[in-house]
Structures are given as C-alpha cells and as structure tokens.
Length: 79
Image 1 (cartoon, rainbow, N blue to C red):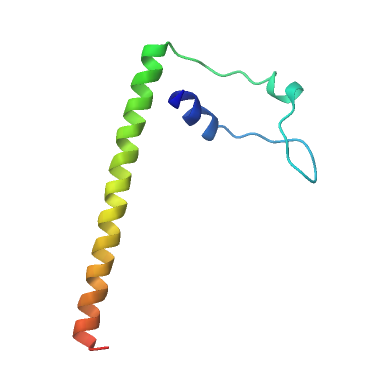
Image 2: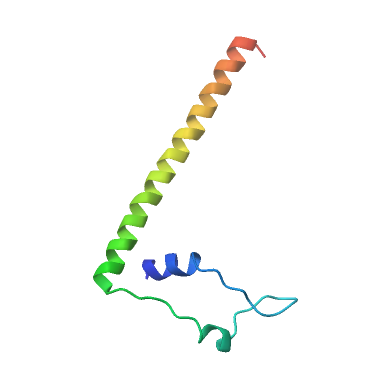
C-alpha cells in the first residue's frame, strides 16, 4: 500500500472539471502504471521510508541549529 501511496503522490494528473477538479473514471482508466512485483514494491517503500526518516531528522536538526544561532545572536547583540 505504501508503494501505491508514493506512486500516486508522485504522479501528475490533469483533472477535469472547471470549478471542482475531479478525476473521472474515463480519465483514470487510460492511465498506465508500471507495477513491479510485491517484493520490489516493499523494497522501494522501505527505502523511501528510510529517506523520509533521514529528512525528518535533518529537518529537526536544522530547526535546533537555527534556534541555537538565534540564541547566540541574541546573546551577542543583547536584545
């Protein structure tokens, strides 16, 4: 399921409908996806999850570093 989540999130759709965009059955039935074997899907999903976890940790580190920088600037400037 995780594989399909990534697949759909990273597929560009041009929806029909002017006021409320929508994907219609005729539109969807003409879309072809390459679906690898389940073992490959699981491997891809696991690798993406690992990368997302790294991104999350790096983002948290960046936030902490920015706060540390602000504290240093505040300490130096004295405001």
